[in-house]
Length: 280
Image (cartoon, rainbow, N blue to C red):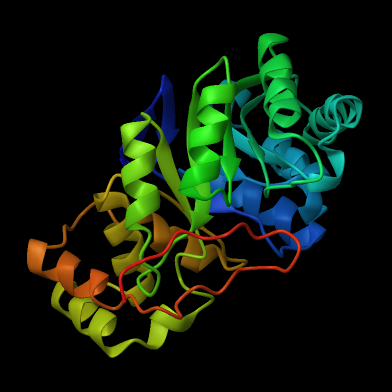
């Protein structure tokens, strides 16, 4: 079992390492969710647009782990942000996930076609109805985060963003902490690019760890919630094994120093906001 810490944010206790299911097909999703839960993971992340909520629910049910012991996150897709569609989509997600609530519900991307107040209002409504324990956002800039915080009656607990050694997210981290929020990191492996990075490999060699384990440790050691995704049961176990070592201040700084101006990998046209500027 894992002894990973939790991240506390505006009343939420979020397991610091979550299992992500982005770009994972249905059969692999059901198999891997069942496997990782039975081997110590306690946080699973999905989204309406991933098309695998039903298989996440299947894996959760098959795992034998009690529902209340799992921190379950899903995200409302941008096409469902109008109030009635939002409420209907959440009910559909709960049915697919085979649960009466999720632990965290996020707005998946900004959508300027629907007033942010309407989006945040719907988030608050499903929370008040008991269908959601905590609410938050994803892929929001610091400006949008600040606006969302002001609009929300209930506290927001996270902003889920792309974060890896090649992308400096210092502005988002600082803004989140000021608001009492956490940052959840996706694409921590930079779509596999970190695996062959000599600097990260060298740090891993000193600790007897893989590059992936080093990066997950780097994220968690910052107080960031890290999502890891794999269809390999062995790699899932390895990704969980990051509690038995710590990175030095110099090692943390060396990984931070890998950030570069063109490090962002995920910025889809029509969805991405005006991102925060970072130091070159």
